[in-house]
Amino acid sequence: MTYYQLQTKSRDHGGNLDNAIDTYGCSLQEWIDLYTGTNPVAYPTERFDLSDNYVLPHRSDLANLKNAARWFWNVPEQAQVIATNGASAAIAALPFLLEGKEGSIPRPTYNEHQAAFENARWSLDDNTFDVQVLVHPNNPTGEIWSASVFNAPMVLVDERFVNVVPDTTLIKHSAQPSRIFIKSFGKFWRLTGLWVGFVIGADPVVSKLRELLGPGAVGGGVIKIESTALYDNEWAVSARSRLKSDAVRLSQLMTSYAVTLVGGCDLFWLYDVGDDNRLHDKLANHHTWSRIFPYSKSYTRLGLPAPADWTRDERALAT
Image (tube, rainbow, N blue to C red; front, side, top):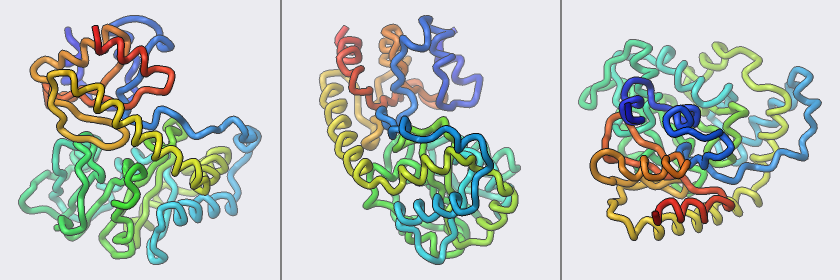
């Protein structure tokens, strides 16, 4: 059975290097992960005191985290900011709190939104709908949305990838009721394992989510790390510059192959490679893991290699 066949039998999601090992062999340490589409250089956490993980978080620390998020993303005063145990927790919970029966989720896009709405017994209809979900920039196409496409009583905007193109953010609309935004740390800071996300908005649903999640959504040590990262604008500016340069390098590398660029952003590129995901299998045989999708036999998404991995990936593509 090919990996594509395995993909179509289960929910498609990141963090699945175990599947790569099961299908193609070798140990975890031997694999290069281009699958997740995150910044390959994580925010440095070595200087933080692990003792913060041994105590319950202080209210003042949590308030500082929310203020840091408000500052970094320029959140309007009218909108509240709540921290969640990862963006996925918010995505899964929100459909149970929103009013309506039908939602619109333009596809292809991040599939957890569809799974969450279906789990809450919503119908999906792109013609008549109560809630509109937009991933901005879109994953995996990189499409940039504008507020002109807001066309529902409630609009849910997933901005987890917008940190690489901050000038395109639609966050100012979070000041309006019925406009809810989702943010996270996994993509830009590559602190995915800390499981921290944010829900931002002036709508009463945000308050309902805060009550549902309770007081212990984020741990003490995580709060210190994330607050520092949000206030570290120098690191953010440097990271955006490096990501843009690396995205250009990957794009230029791929011009010599018979593939068609579909879209992307400074964290990943999406290619149409023809039938049977041959690029994915070629890279996997060199223990480089790329992203394929159960709804397409021709799409392959490539994240950016870490600085030490470029030479190896270039050789894998050249063979």
